[in-house]
Length: 285
Image (cartoon, rainbow, N blue to C red):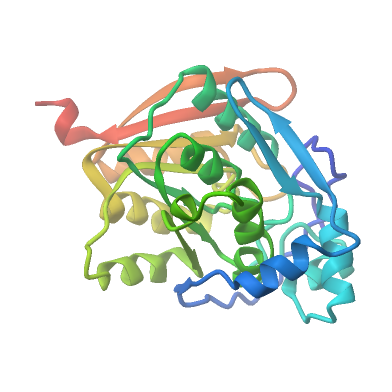
C-alpha cells in the first residue's frame, strides 16, 4: 500500500494497485441530461467554488458525490475505490474524484497568463473533475474531456461541466467526452470523420505510472496539431509508484520529437512543475 502524498482539501487515502490490469476500450460518451438534473437536484449535493484571477469554477464536493451514488444504488468503480480506501485501482479507477494539487497550479497558470482559447480545440487528458477543460471552455475553447473511467465521466465530469455552463446550451455543445485507455483513445480519434487535432493538450498528475509513458507520448504524437502546445503539470516524484518528471522527460527526449521548457516550478515540499512541450520540427525551422 502507498500514498500519492498530496495535500488536498480531501485527505488522500491509500492507493491499491492489483497485479492484473484490464485496459478499457475508448468510447465517446453522450451526457445524460436526465441523470445530470437528478444528481444536481439531489438533497445531498454540495459544491466547492474555486476562485481564479478572472473566473470562478464550481465543482461537486467529493464526499457528497459518494452519498449521491450510494443513494442511487449505482454499482460504480468510484464506490468500489472508496470502499477499498483507495485513490487508484489500476485498470479500474484512476483517482478522478479529487482535484489534485497540480491541477490548481495549471489552472492558475492559465489565468495568470491570460491565455486566449477562442477558436481553439483543447483536450483535457485525464480530466477527472474536468477543472482545466471547464476553465478553457469558459475562455472560448471547444473541449474534449478524457478520463480512464466511464463512471467519472458520467457522474462527475459531465455534471461539473453542466454546473458551470447551465445557462448556455451553445457552450455545452462545444464539449465532447471520452473514457477508456489512452491507446484506444488514439484509435477512437483516428476513426473520427472530422480528423480532430488539438491546438492545446492539458494533462495534470498523469505521469505517476511509468508503464503509461509511451501511451501518453503516443497521444501527443497523434493528436497534437503541428503548431500546437502541450502543458503537463506534475510532481517531481510520486512516492511508492516510481514515476516522476525526470523519468518522463527522459522518455520524452528519447522520443526525439519534442522541445521541453519548464514554465512553472514550486519547490516547497515535493517539487511541482509545469512543462511546456512543443514539436521539435517547428522549433528547428
